[in-house]
Length: 219
Image (tube, rainbow, N blue to C red; front, side, top):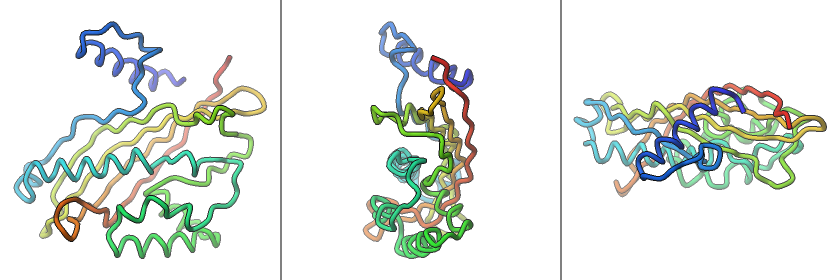
């Protein structure tokens, strides 16, 4: 495991033990999902109120953890995905305009448009082009996910809010030689719009450039 990643996860495990009064072994109690405390800017508080702003951050965070690095879409041995596979689970979290745009981008991406592929990666990653990597035989691909630098800000002249965060996913793939640990780092920006009934939030725009690093895991 990368030293930096392990240090972060081990620290989180230690903090968990301190807070709960338990003795925690970082090798045994590393959290698989962790969301850092949300920062709400004064502008967001003035625009929609702190409670609503934090609700927007939770909706965005929950979506990211569930769909941002969906293991079903990260199989390097799979060369083709269907439009249904790329849209299932996403449609209920997007505004009507964003969903129409998503479907259009999906069709273009499946036709080979690399710009469309990059645009889809801003919401959820798919189609990892590493032919020597394989999903572990035990099916446990994702090791951990961390959301840090989570912030909610106001969007000028609207009741939308902007949610930004850093999403780190650690995954383990098998190869013919040594298994590899892969770290996906994503810098995400979501524009969150109130739903029609005002009870929740929907994603109306998104960007999420990512970096991929890998290294062999020696056994």
